[in-house]
Image (tube, rainbow, N blue to C red):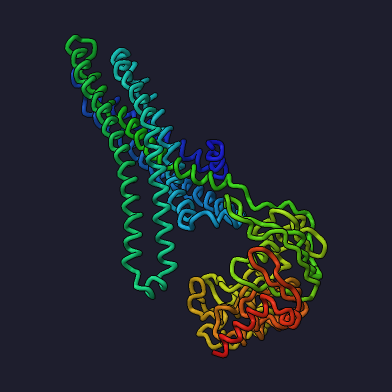
Length: 576
């Protein structure tokens, strides 16, 4: 993990070196003042001090302080630049990882938690990246410089003062475990708050529709109080750590006043040397305080980096395929397919031993009660999930042998829940087809029967649709999704309940667009409204046990089985 953390410094090595060199210069500047003060005090004691000497030392200090200010600016500015750029690099790598994770990962993890790792966690990591090496470097330099200067004054008193350092190190080591656990728990709970917030904001319309504001407030407050509890525990650990460190620091003053005073009385040191020791205590305490700050940042930053690394170490979506497909015919064969969601211990397979074939250019409709695995079956074709047993063939090739990119480029999907991004009409229609021209986008919109509506908008195709397409109606969102597939122009089309959430009039309009979209393509349709699939080349009735019936609309009605019951029930409900 340390190796991974250090690797993020490499692209910014020149700035890092500049930051460290500046830290050296600042540390050296900090060592000058006590020495100057010692010389002036001793000069006064011996009577050798003059105005010229005082002015010379004052000018020397002014030059030193100006130099220190310049390099302190470099540390403050460029040091933070390093942290910001490293944070951006980590955020880039984490987002790339999110894009490569399998669907099953997002099934099991909350969006708010993933956002926390991308934002607040990485902010603390960047603070550690900036201040960590700088504080260590300055602390070591100032402690080493103080030791060298003070040992030349009086080695015995210097060793007595530095004897406190092992106790500080021991206490820090003992405190580390508890503080790390406390920080980790507070981060986990912060992710829970983000999840609750993201969930509530996304569902704000449902909340208002069901007047459930108080319920949402209570749920959020429950998570908020849990976070406050864990954060309080973390602050307790930090507070105790700070208090003991401050006590050990104050103990230095006691040691110097007591032992240094005795040395002064007995003539082992003179007044100037005693003053230098007292002044150097602040020089000595400064690196200790930096060490304390570093320890706190280490707990915050490393707990965030651990969570960051946990994601990077997750297995990516498997793509062992080597076959690149381009101009496919679109034949699809399900050969003894079984599937169950990984991790669902004790759960029955969603699909068990299913065999089915769709000829190129034909339409297969999947109907039946909910829970029969119809949508899951469609998700297996583009390998959103991999089959547990059996295989799925496209033009005779196992989809697991086909590269994911080329497989999915040849598949178009229109589902019931269309997701539109917070961009323009043009960007949403052309999503995944970045090289599409305006003419191609407009042609796709016209085929999807959405062009005329877009032209009535204030900015036409440059009108923003809002988050999740909130500014559009359900039918308009569906048309955008259909236009998107027209532009993609795949040979294999999956329609998953594409019209079930629409009113009858809108459904008829969308259905007409879908029929035009289906021409010359292999189509797999999932539908509850049987009226929309009467023209399918084959209809398969599925339930949790597998395929109950299969055939054309007329054949299934003559069979007088489950399909006829479903059709007559829907026909009766429609006429009522």
